[in-house]
Length: 357
Image 1: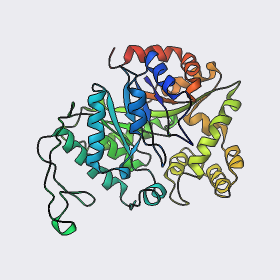
Image 2: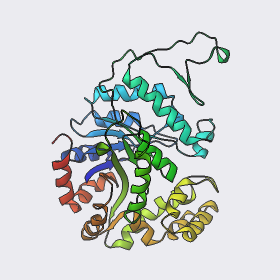
Image 3: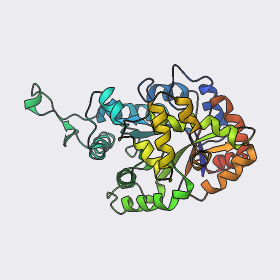
Image 4: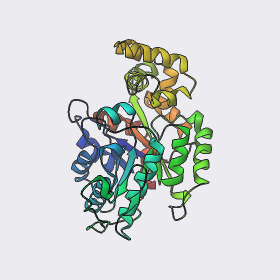
């Protein structure tokens, strides 16, 4: 299992120490570094800026939201970054949630799986560059039909020849059907709340998708599972877990509407439905402190690495037996060297097992 580093998305401004953390990750032999976007900073610009100082580490978006750009604009950004990085870019895509999609982008959210399927199909057409791009789907139509515009649109082919026609596309997915879709049409899965004790269930969902995998897709053996895992060092498990509780409370209570929070649904599959109801109630009432305090320590331990260096190493053993191919560490950029040192054996493995080794 390789190591990666997740810079996350920005809060009020650029995260302090992110550039140095990216360089540290490369120096330590990490496989990849990833950026994100919500409704503030975008995913592509920081990746290009910070990644310009690197030479080996892979650069990925975890994730770029499909409602933020058309499929062709996304493909343009991807092929551009792939050229500039010398073939190190990974396009990670996700649908986000209805509050962001309809509130920030002003687009309808229904049928996210069907929309994702069409989006990926168009991106792959652009990257293949075998013919001018045409698509007649429910959500994307290229060229635009004459009755919806001036009638002057025509099929176009990218002027830039992509460096890799098989540039990898990874999908963020939490629901069962979405996880299966990822194995069917993508080159990798970007889970947010992976838990080792649900590994058998996740493997079965991936198998369901692989059974429908499209002809000509990358081999199943090359499929990647890159799981974002919070990692916090502390005097003990409880103290370190306190740093992760607000993150879980935000996703369980604030990153989705009442009755339509897919992050909460993913956490509920771990068996914490009652605790999640309490977390959401506090969060929606505006009491974030009580929401965080209601996050059980065992829930934190299910989805994160927390505690002393010995605690982190002990917890890591369960992850190494899972389908996860890359553990994407999410930690304060200033703490990355200490976390990497705590996982020293894995950091060495990351260097030895990197794609460029």
